[in-house]
Length: 149
Image (cartoon, rainbow, N blue to C red; front, side):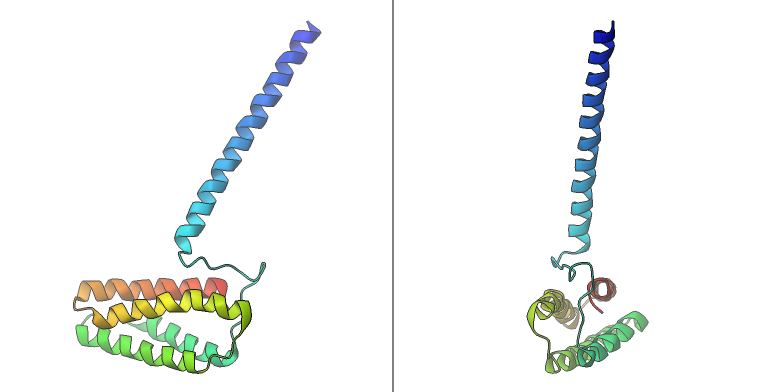
């Protein structure tokens, strides 16, 4: 009888351990998939910290952030003016680039797709598409703030 109880207890322990590890593996896969969707640029943190951006460069980024978050236009001329303002600020940002190393590389992972997004806005001929692109700009600024300071 003691042997039977011991065998049953051992089997329950093995089954419980296997079920728990399977659940945690599934949760890990889901978390990784969510992180990848939220961060399509494959950005990473500096260990557990945000990357430091040079103060001169942050001035242009914060101006872009203000322009993007405050934009409420819905006419093509307004979208075009907005995109041109962002282009000028991107020019300010790149002309003041003094960063080097891994922080610089991570910033470029964010910046190059952002530039492409703004170029797409400049070329857009549709109010709906332009509105969608401004929404994407807002998402990109949130992403920037997740990985940089």
